[in-house]
Length: 140
Image (cartoon, rainbow, N blue to C red; front, side, top):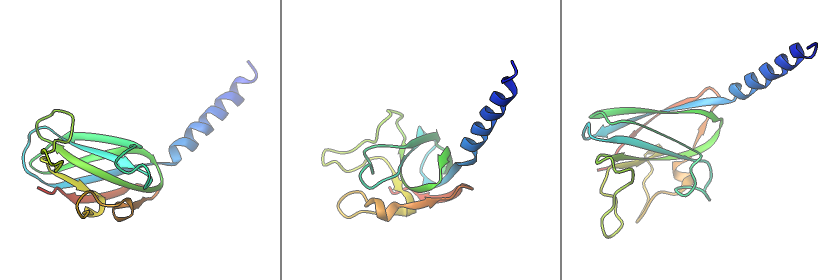
């Protein structure tokens, strides 16, 4: 029983330390064409994992014009994100037979690729410990 205060103090210190490094990424997505479906965000933290292995994700109900999605409790660091408007709510990014997206999409920094998605370095941004507000426009 005499160790209870010390244990409680250590647990509180660990919890505070883990929350101190947690940042929120708030993304305003412009040019949303309809209220249908959801807007989905996938977050990546390396060139090797870009568009392959997410380190965070979030989604929000689509709102015609502009939709805001927040990815919470991230460590500060380098990231890139990919977004798509899942207008038909089927849970995936639809593409035509050639592999071209048929649903609207965007990448951080409004990066565009040539004959495919952009490179991680073109979409990369730094998330500070205080958090970040970003704005992108969907490509139609």
